[in-house]
Image (cartoon, rainbow, N blue to C red):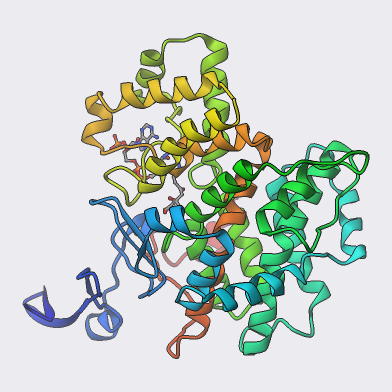
Length: 428
Ligand code: SDX
């Protein structure tokens, strides 16, 4: 098996090393290409370009495989808790019972936010999008911890990771409560991660709030399924910002904004809005599918297609199955689920989608469950971010701790005006 590739340019041959990963993925190492040949590569949207090696998550888009630190997502979804998966992603192994207990306790002790930070919420309009609020609040956390956010200090790295994981649910629920004009509910140390979040989101001081174990279970599942996904857009953003040695709060704040986009994590909100529009329009699903295929129409089927999965997104399969189970356990009948299933069936029979290998992705069904859990639509992408936070942190930590970390700085091919004198350029 060759371990070099030969590149021939103008009759001259150049040997480039071939890198092989533990799952037998192959890459041509071009780190010396420009120095040897004067050439760079060009790859719009990085469809063919690896930015790093990583041991955190493996996915195979052709086979629909997803594993966190080698463990299949299906097994983690069934057996693990979200904080356990967070530990696995960040530290590279499943925690022992004692390690998990200590981890949960450590996170619990950092769930409160500074009272002054709460005042920032008053500056946002009531209908401000929660993703804008989350990015602002998470970035602002750094102003309270300036003495402990040096990415090159291991103790600072640890406490920053703990504070972010612990405070994210508090900050998210406060954003929701402020949008309702309801009093914020503080975290309770006797509650687990997901129960605490539900209590902060939905309880009110004037009455007891029953934390439904079925909802806690469903929330754990959804957060686990979103926890990491190798070098997606928002993770690559976190890595790029972190590579300048900006602090972790700033890198995560940037990642939240990248995730917000409708082509990325924002798709889960788009899917629900699309399903609501389809229901309201009364249009047959077939018509919607035709619209999604029409090149002259900007409409796309949100929740469909994926840069890497050219087969079923394994997470979508798990969530679709969970939809039926969670809705029936909660006694919820949601017509949007029937529309989603009809849409999926129609699309997967249509050659346009089959030829382009467009399948439902993680965002297609997740909103149905969030809706059944009582999460408002404009908070769906915040839920995605809460799930993805440990993955962002794990990928950032892996990069910061790697001995050969470099600041990320892509090249370009210039196609603008060539050398032009000012006087010639000045309009007469
Ligand atoms: C996430 O990367 C990750 O891992 C992301 C993620 C994660 O966990 O981090 O998995 C989470 O972001 C999932 C994706 C959520 N986004 C959506 O559901 C939005 C709808 N999907 C598309 O916008 C699109 O499929 C992308 C953005 C997801 C992927 O886009 P690509 O890989 O750049 O592919 P493309 O846009 O070039 O599309 C290829 C073809 C095009 O048609 P042709 O030019 O070949 O004729 O497929 C078409 C597209 O028009 N197409 C769709 C479509 N998605 C792609 N047509 C209709 N409906 C769609 N949803």
